[in-house]
Image 1 (cartoon, rainbow, N blue to C red):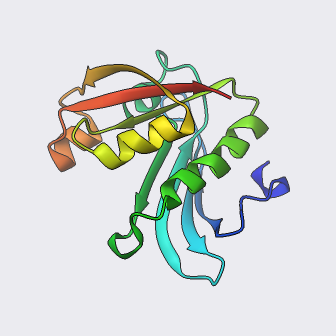
Image 2: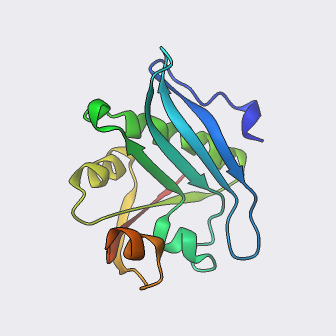
Image 3: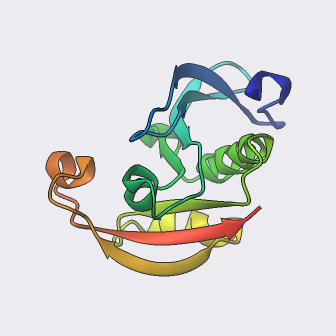
Length: 148
């Protein structure tokens, strides 16, 4: 479905890296490279399909949107631009809202959520079997949601 949508603006575009089919426990997930218009990879982002946050733990704790900008390119609001493009993808899936989560100490990500117009909801304790808990030692996530 996303192939009918131009996931690009005047500075960046999203190049599909992987599309993971969903099942009863895992949402369908798109993974993209974030690239500059001159074709340099500047980061990556992902999108999980679905807006039933209480039914799917991956979306509840990890959100619909994830992003990471390579250190050399940080400070240019590329993650904000990528999120805006991912909102087009959410709309193409007839989603009514999206959730973004981040580490409470990650001020840059929290600011991106605010600039998007997402509403701060709460801080969730991550379960001990959560990917971020196991691999990054992250024990909590701030939760932001926005209607699209």
